Length: 388
Image 1 (cartoon, rainbow, N blue to C red):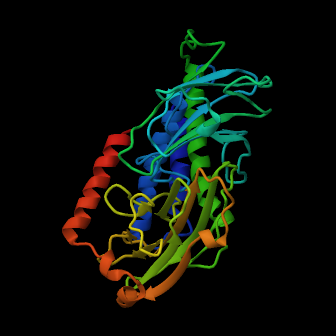
Image 2 (cartoon, rainbow, N blue to C red):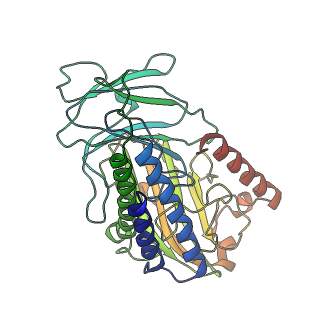
């Protein structure tokens, strides 16, 4: 059968999930199966919805197709490209806090992080007064041409990130076309092509699972537990993004108090991730907060309490049954070097001591009804901007 390669790959990926070294509880395994389902959906979509000669942007990471410690504040779009052709990207800038472009010379694998050959944000674009823009990516030198970006040898993927601070911001639009094939249609499907696509989707699925099981070993698990690094340029070459990473291991009677200065960067966000290296449920739980959403204390610091139990404060970050997981800060659209003083400090405390450890506790409190309203607002915002 033409689908045999895909079926075999799904079985292989399922075995990788079931034998993952971090599994300790039924929840870990059940979330692994959910992660696998999202991977199947994403790789099938990417394989069947894209044509290298007739490219289009696809959303390979989202609330139902998570991977790579996806940022709850970001929509990710990708298109396959070749370094010897010219492409036109048109769109309309939304009201989000950041819009960035990155050209990669390959894909993430379990042995390799692809190089970033071009990375910039929309400040390098000439954008019309109504938010419209038109950018060219091609093999020729720019030679002073406005909105022309040269594709380096090996360029294989264009990734665009639309980053929200206010989750009610207006989403933009985005389209890509290859200059020499615009107005033409791809060739009809054949049995050989169909078989190749099922095989390619299967291979991509196995690679996807293998890659993101290995990735934390490179960047997280060698760090002391319940600590976070100072801000550093994000691995992978994003031009204006710093990050601070760590991993946690706390029980129900403990909490992490994370203190970080509210940044002057346009975007600053924090999130938790599971050991599958994906975001925790950010729609129905407060597992992330950015600077727009978080409460800032009078001394200019944001204090987050990471715990399973509810401490009754606005900046509670829910671990949703996860004793272990990943911690991540991102700063984007920065225009200066970030240092240790811009980064977080982490303190492990007994849950019973949380109140005494928060210097502004009396102004940090929130009622159950108010917190429920915050969750309802998250659910509405995700539904409005992240369907699909």
